[in-house]
Length: 180
Image (tube, rainbow, N blue to C red):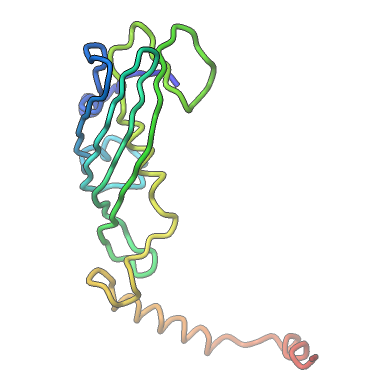
């Protein structure tokens, strides 16, 4: 993976200049909110209030980036369709190596050349957050939270009850049920 800077001006704030840094650990803080996700057209996340702390450890041959992203993401409940704040606490690590030769298509390591002066972390932050999103989001205990849409759940339960009553069973299954 090559270290390249973001082409979008609003995402330029999510890059870390490393050339003037001394060897050792350095900390950076980034705010990740709605404006950040607006730059990504097909983002799963549209609204969020997150803080991203990045600990950069500069060594002679590499840079180690430790990410800690926490806060809330506005998610939609897959059960009742209500919008609710989903708490997020993500910890990830990325390694960047100083090298003039291409190692290949290794997605695990960022390659930094002499011409690179900063690391673009916007895409890394975006990927970490989207991968951390659960496949199914549920606002909590059914009908017992402040975010759960009780009216929607009642409507769904009525539809399920009506479908079960009107659904006729196939007589072939009735014959099979008698075999025991």
